[in-house]
Amino acid sequence: MDKFANIEALVAVVESGSFIAAGERLGVAKSMVSRRISQLESHLGSRLLHRTTRRLSLTEAGRNFYQRAVQILAELDEAEQSVAAETSELRGAIKLAAPITFGLRHLAGAITDFLDIHPAIELNLDLNDRNINLIEEGFDLAVRIGELQDSTLVARRLGISRAVTCASRVYLDRHGEPAHPGGLRRHTGLQYSNLGYRQHWQYETPKGETVFGQPQIRIRANNGEALACAAVAGLGITTGPTFILGGYLREGSLVSILNDYRRPAVGIYALYPPGRMLPRRIRVFSDFLAGRIGDHPYWDEGLENS
Picture 1 (spheres, rainbow, N blue to C red):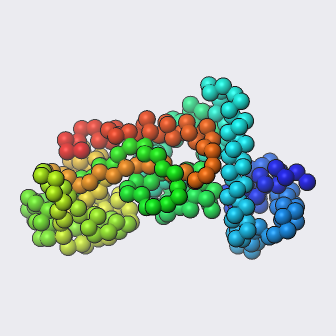
Picture 2 (picture 1 turned 60 degrees about the vertical axis):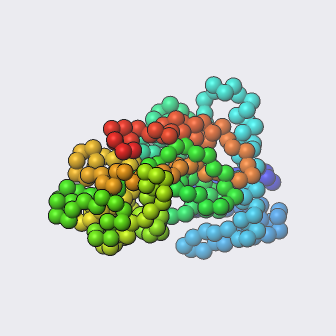
Picture 3 (picture 1 turned 180 degrees about the vertical axis):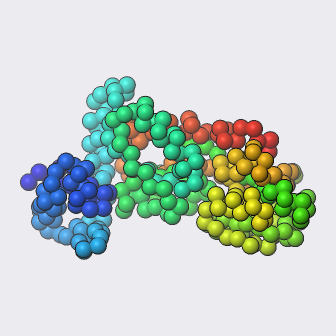
């Protein structure tokens, strides 16, 4: 029995979601993948996968073994790469999770440039605003924006995300412009539903005090791009990250308001599973993203109040 091949087969099945996809990834037939998993389960004396006609899922024993298996493969990969000089070609796969709008607007171009520099890298990108379980779903890293919840994940800050409050000129001409966050109570709000009310409408005064606005919420959405479109249409006031709203402000379809009252800036992070050696390709990719984003990201250029 080839223990390494069998462990590699299990990881491939979990990360790709099927025996067929795992076989394509490993360059072997589906039957060979199934045989390797069966050999591994027989050797361990425990079932690792629940198999149904619709989906595969890890058993409790399988989840524990998979976490250790990923760590073993990552450490082996790092050991192999450490033998080569740091200038040698990066190889291997990167499985990345990222928020939808940020991924489409800003990560897609960065990924294209990174892959152009490193042609032997393969990348699997999952754009989703849900909370990803990096360990169970086999991700190498995730990009997350905002305050991080307490967890065992390892975090590296890639840069800063700033926020702005804005509305269309049509809306402001019709309803007036609030001079203070307290004035929002007389206005219609467009709110990002993945944030709590107080988080979404929290401001800092010029004296450093924290104040809150309370608009009447007309639209709640879990996507900032949808809220920006609603604001452009004159449906209300929204507040959100400049990586979404900055373009609308530059073209003039939205106007920034409450400019003396800043929304709190938040970090943009790369999150990694804990307890494993970080492969060189992941480290280099993270360095690339940090250089691309930083504390003064390119999407803030030309915004007076960013």
